[in-house]
Image (cartoon, one colour):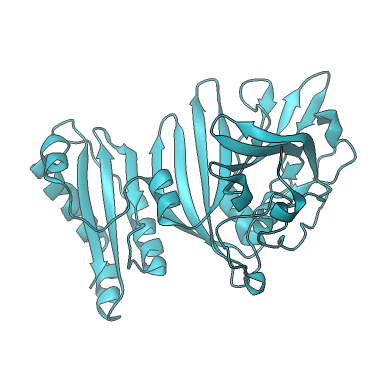
Length: 323
């Protein structure tokens, strides 16, 4: 496809190799091309997407197309090329999550491989912008374990995850985290869970940390006040005052602690669905926010039982802890 080896190697060096381990449950694997290949823990795989700090390149915004090209747990397609507005490299791989595997009922109940896609929306010479992965076509009654608890798997390999935004509803969840380990470059990890009565599916992606990536995954990220048209058309002042009072009361202890540490603050914007807690969107990705403090703020706010809106419309409000 005209992508030369010189261009491919002109990017960040590959992170340290993934340490493969067999899943606890042994079963035939689909697709068959994965037969005999090792399986890796989800946390180990995500760790491999985080470049080593001491191997920084002049370009720190992506990965080389040869990333994990020799990985034994991945079977890469022989084809490289454009798809829609992106250039992609695709494959399938074996992943387990704390000894749990995705399955699909075929002739027997088989382990299900995961799809992996490396993609770039711009000029391919600048390398990979996003790594996306999910269990292969996993959804419905013939599949098992299509969704997984990601954070415990990250903790197992020493990755801390700082929530940037989250949106939950009866049909699933969208979340974006800033993932960190002291010896690695920070990355954004997002996932989307979708489904309903027929089952749920989950899709993950990793990107370099940037304002643009956060904007795409979390919506508007800035320090501007709420636009008047949002306050007028989407919010109701009694609702704002009620939600604000609830948040302030819940965060009282944190506010006192933050007051003792000058210079640190966390401002969050919450968009409450008309039914209250059924669809909260918590955005903490503001410039100047103290990440550990925001972690604590979110833990408090997520425990609140937000009531329905009095006006049956969406309500937008902000809460700041610290100075």
